[in-house]
Length: 291
Image 1 (cartoon, rainbow, N blue to C red):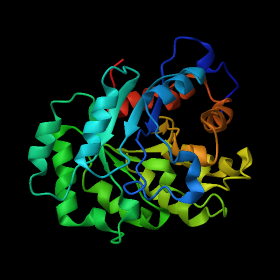
Image 2: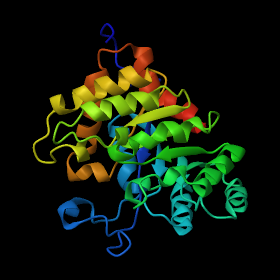
Image 3: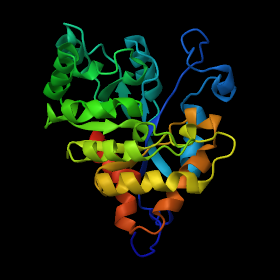
Image 4: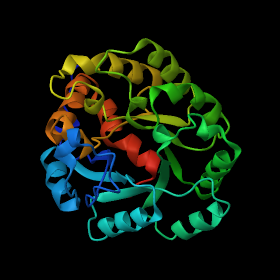
């Protein structure tokens, strides 16, 4: 930790970016992953709902990430970005295993706001799907077009990631949600070793996001998160970490303000420059966001 300094949110000149949030019009069939326990997010969540929260918490922009594995959802996200300049980037979905992946990426290259893609690897029966030749062929195509790739996995899949990312040293990757460690049950030892192994690759970043949903939804406290934050910051360093709220999913356990407050408290003693990197500059560089 560094000497205490002024928060960049107090300077009025800093452009903070929420690097991970979602929009949807709730559909109980399509969105079956939103269970009855998650009733708080069984609603529509659109730019008009998020924009005031960003402003109130000092953020000037965001990156919206896919929550449905269809190209129709890409169209929906592009529609949300139209007329909402605070949406700085879109992370969509394409079938990376498709034989026409280059044609699909060529199509999306006309939309400057699409910065990258994601596949929900955490839900795949084949836990090592990312290592299959057809999937890796898709990642190679992303690299051809300069797109980023968000890695959404559970901790049991971390062991496959060094082989995966090392095959593409020029491809930019980011681990979503710290790979979802078992914060509720204080599972940290194995996750620590594996996340540190991934962090050795300079082309891999980590989103400090999604923590509250991996904790005890009703009884979490700030101290629950600090050991995991310590590991990620030490492993990835100041230049390869970024903030994401995971709104509205975070609402099952915490408000937007509470979610942002956890990391604002943690980074309060870091230098202004280090805070500016984490809360905006790293995401802007990773996703090649425009001002």
